[in-house]
Each structure stands twice: as structure tokens, then as C-alpha cells.
Length: 161
Image (cartoon, rainbow, N blue to C red):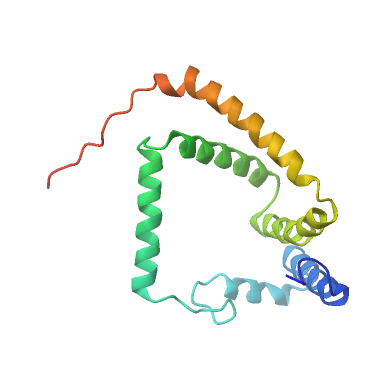
């Protein structure tokens, strides 16, 4: 928490500077000798990238839960989440067309270091967020009445094997 809130400015600046140096080096490699290093990190079992693979049972459990959630969203059982997935996918596709994954990851890292400080400094953000959420809920209620309630939703058909 102290790292993200910049309580120790030297450590926070060091981490941010290190991330910037890594991003710059990987985005604009100064030497062709760094390219084999970049290629070796792309392998999923690479020792440089961590290489620790979670136990199969835990991985299977997490994957099954994620697939169940995706099935519920795709089947139309939760139209609110369905619309949120569509909106998030649309935003990600627009942002993804502007930059590569590494740059997007670096921007997220910067935001994780800047937003908590901003939030702590300007505590009135909660008031604005509450007003925004109230307005979004009003707009969703209107959208639900005019559009979503008119879409017929039937039960899922299961295939017999």
C-alpha cells in the first residue's frame, strides 16, 4: 500500500523508473542481442517468465468457473453483464488498435500508481462517483424498460448425447 500511495517516494519512484526502463527497452530494443531474450520470454514455461504452473486441479476449477460465468452471460441470463461485456470489448478493441499489448500493460501499471494517489488527495471523488452511478442506473432502467424487457429469453436447450 505504501508503494502505491507514494509514502516512500524513493522506492515508488524507483519502481516506476524501473518499469519505464523495462518498457522502453522491450518496446525499442537498442541492441539486436536483446531480441533472443524477448523471444525466450514468450514461451509459457520459460524460466525467465516465472515458469510456475499452478496445480491442475486448481487450474481446472478456475477454468470451469470462468466458463460457467461466460455461458451464463452468453445465454442471456444476465443482460446487464452481457451489455457490460459488449461495452468492455468495444472499448478494449478501440484502445487495442491504438497501441500494442506491452504499451497497454505499461499504461495500466502507470494508472495503478497514479490513481490511488489522486483518490487519496481529492477525497471528493466519491461524491462525483455516486452521482455518476445514480445517473447510470437511471439510464439503465430506461434502457431496460424500452429495449431489454422486449427481448424474449427462453431456457437453454440441453443436447442429449
